[in-house]
Image (cartoon, rainbow, N blue to C red):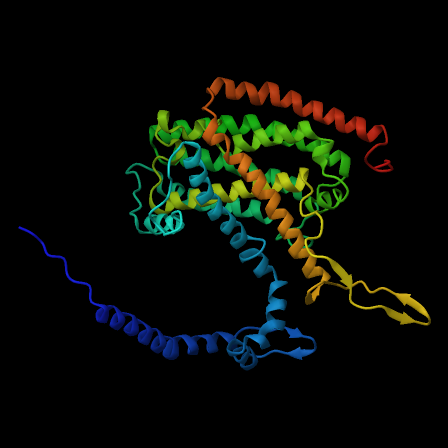
Length: 436
């Protein structure tokens, strides 16, 4: 019995599109606009340039975008914008999505494969969207004897901890979600939650392979967190601060990797172990324990863990850039010039405000943000590339060798790095009162 496929009719397609457009307009007119007006009534609006904004003026600005620029600029300085959009979750999630796609295509090229290809006409560019829709629509299966409250909480805790890590990374001058004096100490505190969450994931599933993966992750992370922390003490000694923004500002003339190459190498190896990347992917060894502590996770629970993993990758790469590569420091991408000379009592005063040539109306602080973001993203992309590369060229190491690397070799190198930092400080080359 043969089945005849229905013929394509252009008229049906056009009718379906027009019907959808019609109902969208109707719903927006009858429901969307009234809801927006009601919400605007209960929002407290700021006073911008001495003018009081109200719901009616905001609604008018929504229909005339050029009138909304003052409100947009004010909103960009709020904590909500920094947390949700830039440099917080939205910015990090966008980079994480790009990293997932680039990693799959890069590994395919290294292994003489095609990689994502069919989903999207350009090199499978829509594969990530397809995978996301698949994870959202898939059923979430909970093991019968699992500790359900903890099992449900693990993906959320993992993604939230990764988000907290992202909040500590400064992207440009003044653009950081949580700019605290003990920023580096806060990083260590946040990183310390990942082993706990991993063990909880393995234990709460009440399954053999996740529990083995969780124990492996605990051993691995504890073994490498100590040399990771010790590798950064040299930079703290040279800068005399734990504030990540101040550490970036201390690298205006040169990055710390020039004087702390051993610390950078130790920190980079520890990053691979903390991210459970090859050759340190023992907690998720597919050929041995299925997927380790991720085995029983399904649907969007697995998707949240993957999102948290790539947010964590971005945060670690950004932290490496902040500590060793000068952060946002770099040559100006756009040439700048003063707005005008101000003459007061015969004295020429150059104003603080500068503008970028060929971009009128863009003041210095906006130029610094753009320039700093460009350099930060370029450096972070380079570090992420070197984090992804071992997955395509290195085999997995044995668990005993992994522990020996962390407990013996990297700790010794971390102490060597500390001694170098002490020598630089006490010799008067770098540090308070140093010649550099």
